[in-house]
Image 1 (cartoon, rainbow, N blue to C red):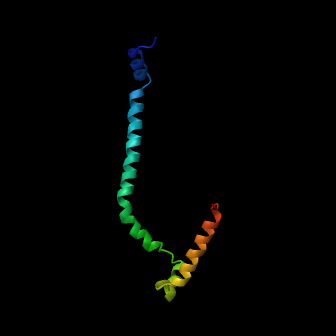
Image 2: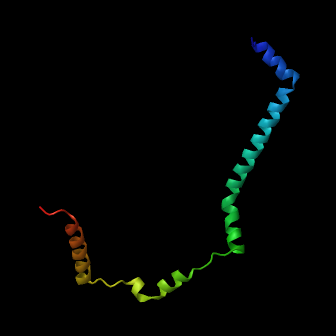
Image 3: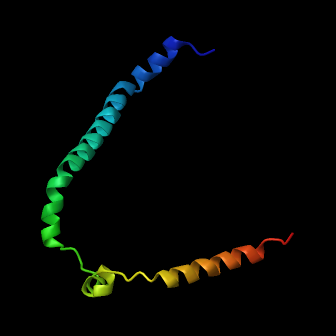
Length: 97
């Protein structure tokens, strides 16, 4: 049968405490590096944006230049026709009484 004293003796004999402390230090250092990276990220990103500027997409420049994109025209008759067509499509698919 397994006894607690025999388990502790095996840990001491196989140098388990130093292995445990080494593992804990490795994990602590890795978490410290991650925390340091996260805390420095807001300071590093503006520097990277100067090196790698944001690419302007061709879609944004065209839509901003067109006056229709800034002031869309509302045609109430067109909206009413679309609403009526959608209504007719939905009501004809329902079973008749």
